[in-house]
Picture 1: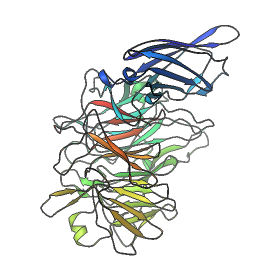
Picture 2: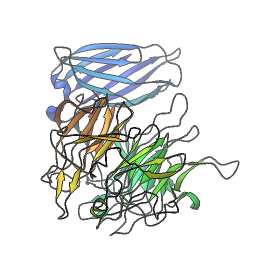
Picture 3: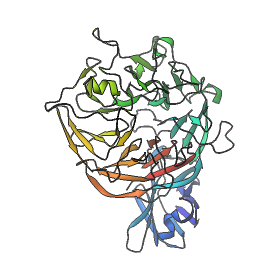
Length: 516
């Protein structure tokens, strides 16, 4: 059984797993947003669900006591613990779910963050400095959710891996951190060989190996681009060995390199990485592209290896992409991956193709010609695949020859089969660029970014993943941020990390969006 005595801000519970020989405990730590963000302060009841067992109990001034009784589990049985706070009308005002974990006949501990459904709420966690001692904001860092082995059932991931970035004063980091969602802690994730900013981090797993990731691209000190990839693999004996260099033939993306490239997952753990800048200072666009994937072993006693393979340019052009692109988007659709926007002013003036398609079968890009003429290019937008199979381009900006940016509140609906592009003005309440996007409970969640005045924004907007239209009113964020990352986790939370705040300084706090 699970029994709990809760104080505002944290709960420690004990779940007794009844076996033939003894009782075993599952210790549960419940965390909530600090201060008045705690949803239990609004609650009159708590509901706890573990597998097919459920119980409820009254809440008074944020406190409650509850018990769940379950039968002796099967060793290794996977489950998740769901905790909900309900107000007097039965409305769920707080929700939290643990990552998947195994009920075992040993003592287990798990943490659950309970936030307000459909909102971003704060936590007490912050990015640490390289010594893991003090909070330190980061921008241009890389992050991804780690994945467990692709077994049946799929192995749970360790959480989110965060790497590098730039702190105030243009100081670059060689540090990596793991946000472990099962314990709600930021832990040491080892050290990369070379500090970098503007890289991308991509997870990799197959039926044999999981929890791996590959760090691709980015810039070192000044405008030097990093072409060597680095591999994260925690299945080693020492923290100093979690980062290593892949084999030479699959370890380098080649020159010139890519700063802030776009990425899209085209198959499970196979990613297309394309475009970006060849110089962070001038933002000259890149036409480079690579695939991040697992390669067959080169010996019978070896496992598959994660690395990169360049997408070669065709004979009639010098780059893999038809047109070099920066601050563009990649969207995986049913038959191809759409690259949209990101054109330089010169390429816009030269009427270069605003969109192109990557074909996995041909391992090549080709221009997408629209039946009614190309729509206008944009940069700094976000993009998603709707349930209809069409691509939705959201927000972004256009740029004048003077360098002045015009933030966009419109969307662009692209059908690559019909070769159509439909602009809908005013979909976003506030035009924005440099925001994050993730999908949750049938909604596209667009958070933060810059507005027309270049002010860093502190709210999220919500579009239906079916219609692409507004699904509800905007919701505030505890920390305004732009050019940050949104990392979807396995426990219905999305981690918002990094970026810059209203003062244009790197942001240290970790915030979380809770699924509706």
